[in-house]
Length: 312
Image (cartoon, rainbow, N blue to C red; front, side, top):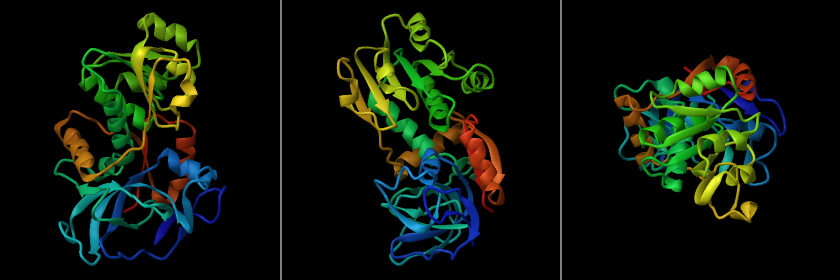
């Protein structure tokens, strides 16, 4: 089968031919229709993940997936061949990813049915970013009317978090570059979003909107310690970049280091919100599997939203 692989790290990904996987006990074999790129894919290619996760070569990249169940491993219940499913590859190692024509995934975690009304291309870009945004917002326990600063709002996680936070009644401040990025962020929701230029004087811009500090921060990009300084005393900060409480000593704030858990309940909740129209999956570009290198280049160039890959 065709797949986007690494033979070593750090190295550039390549589209190669590898043996298709076979489902073991408790696993589904999924024929992948769509997937998307996430930060971990670039980090893996750059060699940043080998210190904390086992790598198995040839290493097939990719976490998100949407497709059709092709075969069932021994003991699988609740799924049938032909079912449309989506989710996130959840394994304790890197190497059996979803940027491929087929992927095997545990049937008991990280997979859910695709409901009617959810396109495969959207489902294949929803899992990682959606679960991360949802868990981050839950961690800061945002209340209606509170002010949230989202640093990195134009990325996949950030663009979903903007929508989810606005739907919860938050007053959203979002960082983005002037121009196309700002237009993208403000177009994510009908609610007002205050966009600030992270390349300028961030503190002055945020304080002009929230003089006493913001109630919560989603740290998806940027300097975590600087962002902590923009919180009111007692504020909450959720970080997807590994920031810890020790990094913000001197600030009366609480740091939550985020590890998303895209279980079936979370995936189903996200899918239902997309189908209802309450949430839009911000896919801004789709590449065929053969052009995966172009997709990686677009991702590295900070293209707003989600970069999807069609594998069918």
